[in-house]
Amino acid sequence: MTDDTANKPRKPGCAYRLLTLLTALLTIVGAGMALWAVMLPPELAARVSLVLPLEAAAGTLWAGLFALVCWRLLRRKRGVSDWALLAVLAFATYSTIRLLLFARAEYDAGRLPFLLVTLGLLLAVGCINAAARWRRKHELGRKD
Image (cartoon, rainbow, N blue to C red; front, side, top):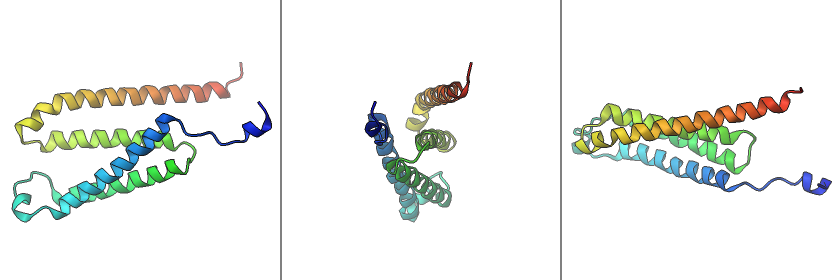
């Protein structure tokens, strides 16, 4: 490998681009959650089991978090992909718990087992990924 190719920044891979796209989409979802909670008509707000000010605040926080992570992904900051994966897992956990606590409709209650299994698989994959990264990081520093 020549010095010229060693100093070139690497192009982001497909997974990195998908993660950037996912965080951008989740920014829009978070903003939509906040707007929905603020703009819901009063007659419908009386029938919703969610606490709307809390829903608006949570949507704003998720939108801000994912906007920041997306911006850092676009700037290719070091280690941001780990934070992006953690944020996605946290959002999936939050969404599942929110549905678990506030689900009234039979349809929502019927899809809870599927969501719980999916969340469990996502968390398992996230833990395995984190453990593999940690192991690689510590094996590189070890001298036998």
